[in-house]
Image 1 (tube, rainbow, N blue to C red):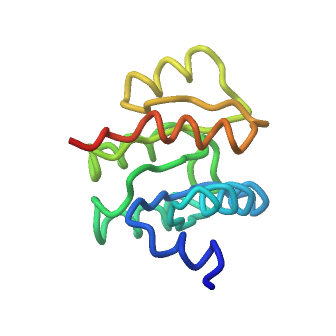
Image 2: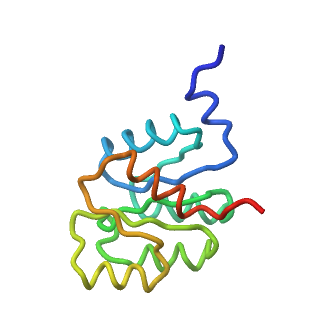
Length: 134
């Protein structure tokens, strides 16, 4: 019998988790894989753009941290929206000031998630952001 992580890695619904904190990436990966999602990770903006540039449609969703080592603003969100406009992006932040939240949503983020968060709540928000099958 195959274990859940092996099955989850074969999922057609892949999520890109972008955060410089290893524990956050790990916890989201574990929760998403338990729910049947495939998961890839990036710890900074450069790695994120490398993953997206090769195949912009490969991810069903992106979970993106607001502050990364090489990005401290919404510029990475802008680039992701340009490269993969159909991919839902959920922002995560411990710094959700009203202006930042409003600008992220105006730039095309489907949600802004406050840290700390419950992994199950993030998964519910991802599911809500995914297009419904026809």
